[in-house]
Image (cartoon, rainbow, N blue to C red; front, top):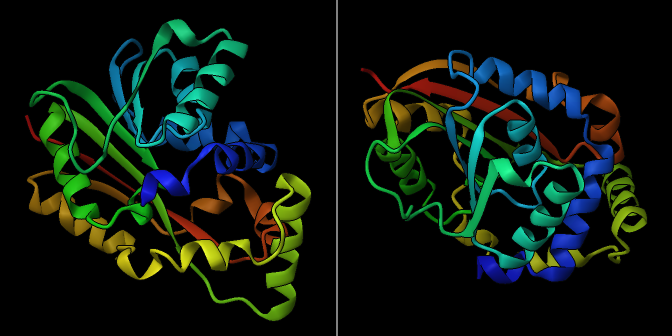
Length: 237
């Protein structure tokens, strides 16, 4: 179900949104969330997508192990990393955030952006992040929630999507109808609670990430239908 959602055509469309994303804003956010994780450390990215966050992590000097359920998304990520000369710092492979194929205490940090909302069992992904983290490692989860929209904002978002991706207005409703009711979409507070249950110490919960990253213009263009939050935590030594 999830792999079908992120097929080749949607991977191409998803990648188009990088033109509305501010690289420096995301870089600043990640620097804050990963404070204390040294350059050269191994960072696991859950849901690498088309490589936007992957590229930032690699450029910051981390060795990135990225995986995604969709091979089509990974193909886009590989090309984007190659275009930026960052391929040698990244290993990409197909994998599931709810069942990570890594031994315990393997990585120095785990990063995930806009992945938890796509998962039918997001708490399993958080548990897996805690499991593969080394003692002293950092978990950084960035996710979000859907906001209600008026008709004008909704159409503005659909027109923005059309001009960026070529997808016809209304595609999202038809697509999400197949699985939307199966997604629990946990809140920032629930993410923090899950991390605490896994024995991690929560460092920060930020429910207004957009002000740091992409700013109000992207939100307006997209119809204001989404807001991002971030939760970071450390695994005790």
